[in-house]
Length: 375
Image 1: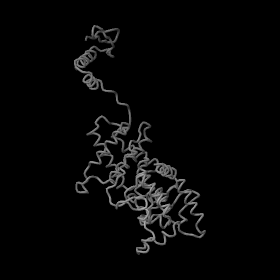
Image 2 (image 1 turned 120 degrees about the horizontal axis):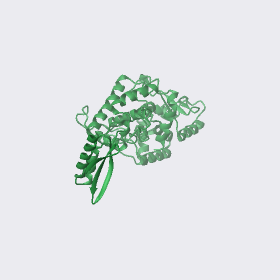
Image 3 (image 1 turned 180 degrees about the horizontal axis):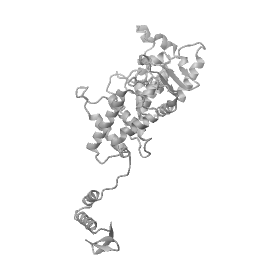
Image 4 (image 1 turned 45 degrees about the horizontal axis):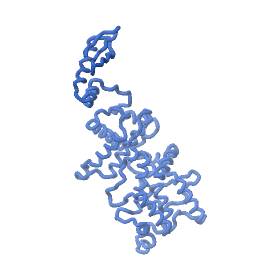
């Protein structure tokens, strides 16, 4: 190979299998042309195509597209979250979210060093990180693996951040949907599989006692049994298409929830309302009457285990609370972010009592519930 000048440009020529190949070095400077020829000579002597291509990447790295640097991802997220009114959370929760992002970026630097921008975090990379979390040990759990709930929270928080970054750059696409673990390592509230859902719903219809409505409300709202058992018709707003109440567990925090009703739930409640006495207070009078009654007669009269047994769903991990875990899992599978899940399920980790039921969020809550219903 040698270089020569042609006009004001320097060119190189190389002979391969008796054929001469000529091309511009892309420079008007002789020194740069010689440097170019030297690198090309090293590539020619690589021996194999794979080695040659590896050298090409070293000598002529592809230009980085301008994007949203991970180093400024947090500031970008906070900026858009403030602008859209989605940062009304405690400093503790905000710091925890930032810590989750920083740990993910640290992991990227060790395992995917070529990833510099938020746009470059793809589905396979996110899935690899989710697998990494499944192998992580928890200091709080004395070296045991991270709990499923903790992993769910981490993935959901990253999803929240990326959904915010989508508003900063059109090139950013959240890769976190569908990566939330659906398993649980607790002994209470295993999420139902889709087959189990259908079996439990069918068993509830067969047994009656208000269980069909109770199960339908739980599946599509994630409300706890105590709130469903004591649900009042005054808390069911057919005009707006929502159930609005202050959950018993979060009442001391002043946290209320507004959950949009999907079409099947709304229709079922409207039908039930038509059957109820006009002056009836509770949606499920039998459940409201027996709730909190620990007597043996009450246990025999109304016990969700009867439904589970009829559905063939066994194991101590399955209770009525499984519906809440099921709803949370379906929300995660549908790509709902942490903020949306908290508003729907009434979590107490954030001081958001005045934000849960704001009309500003009703459309996105409805979209999330409808998406989860289709899962």
